[in-house]
Length: 136
Image 1 (cartoon, rainbow, N blue to C red):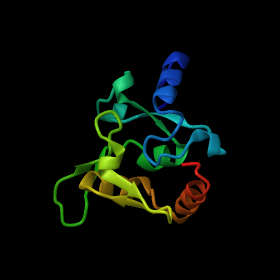
Image 2: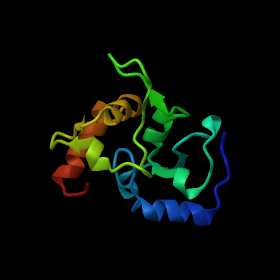
Image 3: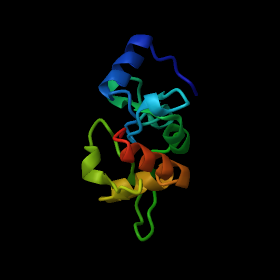
Image 4: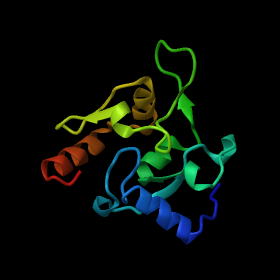
């Protein structure tokens, strides 16, 4: 369900994120698609539209995440939540190789990479190019 987010809130969220996806870290200026204001915890799961539950997201990350908030990882029998840009530090959960591959440092990173498909071949190629040209 789409929720109306006032322009002032959209601007705040975008500026706070430096106009970059808070999940895959791609800058909006290098995307052909407009970025989304995303509910970190979806409304379906009780999330609100306040600033602390909103993130700036590229459409690919937002579409892959959908309304999910967690996933199961192999060998772990409890759900593992996704990276939350309001309470987590990106570099504590991920690192990026020069190849464009995003590596998980934690189970939270692994769960996020899995569901958001952060290492899709096309995304890796794009990141590799952006890294090589100091654009990421």
